[in-house]
Figure 1: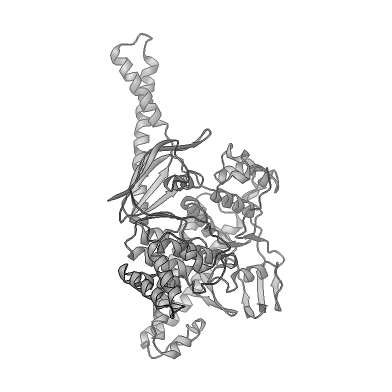
Figure 2 (figure 1 turned 135 degrees about the vertical axis):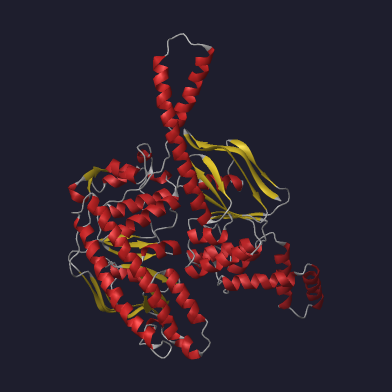
Length: 620
């Protein structure tokens, strides 16, 4: 059953055409993701679908009587209401009946009113809905119903808006970046909920695991055209690659034919026969196709990083509290060259406090932080880029200089740098305040990286970035030779970038886990399944221990051998990365060294996976 149809719509802003003649439908039970680059029309499309804006041409037809709900990136909630008042401030009749029943329970002496409320609960079968309502609030950790919206954090507001939307039982739910501001636990719960519930969804999201596990169709807006893929994210990647290859082959064929026809055109006399006129018309069609170019922009992030000395950053017995709340408790750690750390933990467990102490913007209560003389921090914060009124994009970059140094003694102009960050010449003279959320984040990332940091800290860098930019950023970070610390709720991003995790448990406890996020989830899930109280209370940071009777003699020998081999490979990896850092490699040497580095990384991954399996067996 079709719920919504988009029929030949178009949208422009002045001379800037976002899309034209776009058509697609959303049917009951579909879970559709809408993918497009930042600034190419995602928000405009959502505004049109939800009736907040009108297309310049065409129309959106919604099935009569359907309940359509929209969850924006930034929830629009009344700050004067409580959590409970916000939940019940909807047109859902069942919710109103539940509210009446709960009010009647507070006054048992009014038996007549209680009886009426009870009969309404029976008539509408509201008991099941009440159970679902309480389960959703519990799962979203919204048990404090009397708390004012004005006192909630960004993540709590997002969860409250989500709960209110889900409880309204929409026939079609439209979501704009539903995982933004949610912690990993909430994201995984929402992912499971959407995957198992029979909901119809249309969403914009950059969370690729979410796309993989929830969506069954992907619609891509590229070069003002729509491409539809009947499958999840993996299917989309496979079919898009095939489409791009076919387009490139077709363009190449057209170019060859164009060159041949161009030669014929030049030989023709002025007088044309009917046959030659027809061929001339075909020539211009071929010319247009031959000159089609895929706008596969790539952000080229190439910085002239200052070399790190032997001392980087050392934490010695560092503690920090705010009132009765402990954030760090006697924390010790020494950062090494080329280290890539991911930080995970629930909101309020001290992640931001740790980053502020690391960069020196916050003093610890006890202990000390020693930072090497050669360390130059680059800190990408959640606060984003401060917008100055009437400042243009290019003026933001020129604050750091007219020319920016690159590797090997080269330099580029501020304008050229912006082009590498996907801001064309026209866009560079737009006012910053007119940029989309993703474009602002991209510009902010540019200002951090052009200062050539050798210790890069990224606090939620993936929010609002499109998938194309995310892939490019990941490729840059994989080659980045400095130290890297990342706080992110993007599991795909974390899996690809980091080597180990700092897990913030709360109450000042930080655990160092030797693996990426998926490794950690496997490990953490296995620990949760243990039934004994001893296993439940065991510190996970001590999970690596001496071999016991769970391993046989051969496995014990293999375990110890793997530790030695992994350590040796890590040293080889650092040695190869150091060769890249010198900037002396050229041409074929770069390719050969890159292949060698990838082989070492693959061996480390393979051996670490086996070491991890044996470690878990030791725990059993």
